[in-house]
Length: 358
Image 1 (cartoon, rainbow, N blue to C red):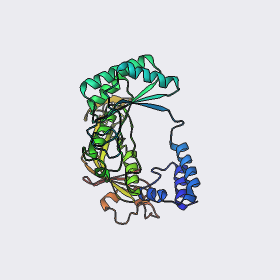
Image 2 (image 1 turned 90 degrees about the vertical axis):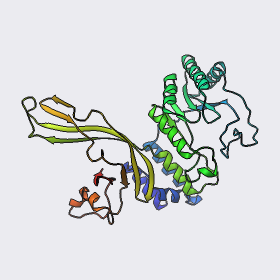
Image 3 (image 1 turned 60 degrees about the vertical axis):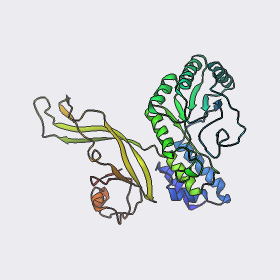
Image 4 (image 1 turned 180 degrees about the vertical axis):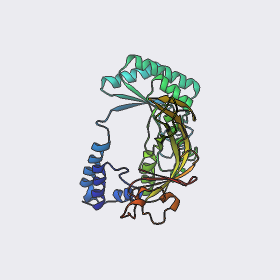
């Protein structure tokens, strides 16, 4: 078995993520055919440890076809190409209900409604939402929409109508996208996926191999699809000497927070740059309450609140050459036999000079 596969299996056994960095992913993709069975065994182990217990069947309907203004090179529905795709408007509520009933009788658990075009117009969206509500009243099936570009407001309308999931492909890596499509930007697809998430929808997204991309670009696409970029955390600090008549046991400063990183770029085999896009807290800063003799004060998410640019370091990152201010927060500096690599993940707030490890 190839050394890399042994490494992957060890990471699976210890629950360490990510299983691969970009360079390792390319190496894995280029392993010779003789390693295929070992690759399948490692993939099976990864799925058993981290994947879903079972798959789900999904049947799709081409609910609106042809005359798409986008020029995606692979698509027969584009008005820019001479494909033979049929051309028809959005299916009626009756037809969509009939298709859902057919799929349910066949044992399909999810009904994917797919439409051509950049996005539905308002009349079409209203009609589709009405059809979704009717389907869910009459058929035991889950819905998924693949309806082009999406805003958060439209995503919420779909969610209210009964769509739990939204499908929107990235198709290829950002570095290869302009060779297959020039009628919209890659970032518009990214923004549609983010809008779906903010609207509370599950997201389904993938790509197509064989569009002239390199293996490095296939890995780039995989890393983009895998990156959720959201986070949550808790900060607390205690001052047991800061007591009062109602809180004799002191004061605790705390903050439960969440946010999202964007513009994630790999710097090298061990690090990624991140931009903080969103940051919110559960409580308004400065809010106070007393509970069980302790005063609680809502604070800022210490060490994160004034940052914009961050660097994420992976386990085994060599410490030689890392910023000294960042390393001053590293627990490993106090070890008698100090390691020359990080023992775990490190997050560096470049703007504030703070480091976090875990």
